[in-house]
Length: 101
Image (tube, rainbow, N blue to C red; front, top):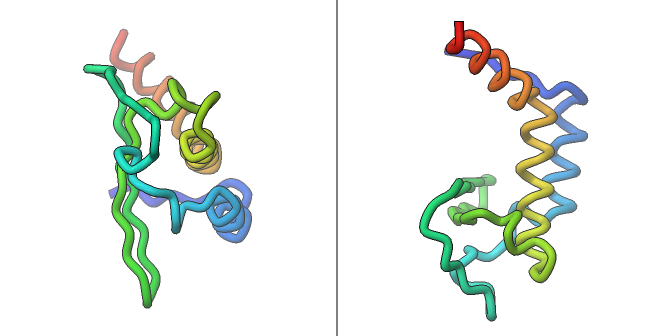
């Protein structure tokens, strides 16, 4: 098991998640006017809970819709923050280098 620790601390991450409405974003399918005709690509599943609330929602390729839909842009912000906070892109690149050897 891997233990992850936020580079800038939990409070910074939680503030950014809150500022981008991680607790209230609608499921992508519920956004009026957003039509996802992409057959392939990355889908992000979000599951958040507090002692009084539970949410589960998904976004498929939010970057493709971020210029027209604020909720998709907020999801892009959330994904970027989590990747940066836990250095996930750096870890992925290191794994890719090891696999090429």
